[in-house]
Image (cartoon, rainbow, N blue to C red; front, side, top):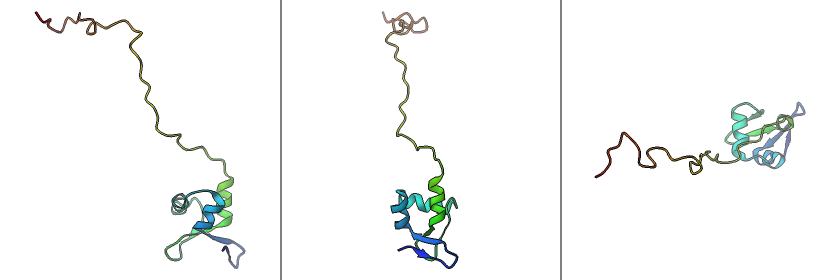
Length: 96
């Protein structure tokens, strides 16, 4: 249950912040440790200021990585064979 402080600010547990934002617990904790969003850690668990979380969520963000990048490989099947591919490499001794 959110806690309303004497100054009117609302504190949320990390579980409540997860439900409100759709972010993972680990991501919220990282944002708190990096001071990207405001909160307090009175004991073991973090408490997040609701206004700080909402301000962060209102900011436009770039999407994250789409997954593993594929390397671009060029196919040599259309190219003419190199000297080493057709057996005409002058640096390699020919078998008798």
